[in-house]
Image (cartoon, rainbow, N blue to C red; front, side, top):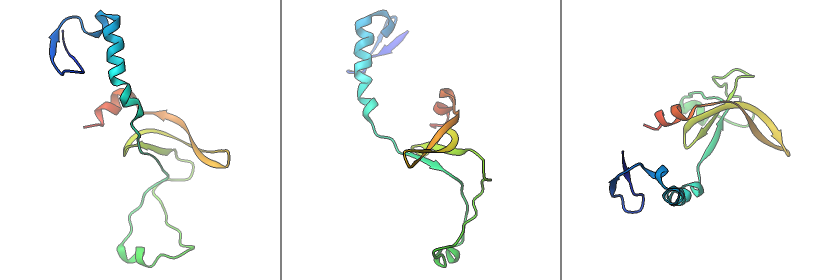
Length: 113
């Protein structure tokens, strides 16, 4: 098996990071910086399309019909990628989402491309 050193980018042959505890720890420390990267999280209630003329005529009190039915799960997006579905909840006077269906890690990776 060939592995790549995260510091130098150089490929080397061997049994990989699992072969040595120190190499495994060093590899994890090299990835720790990824844990502090901020991500944009949004929850979508629904979508619709409108004409520009309708947008320009909007005023307080207008109602916009969305494509989802009441009671349907909300969509949770992380960096514009669907990660989970859930239901709205109230947490300390603020809205939150209780996850009911999380996209599998394999599907998340597949949707990156």
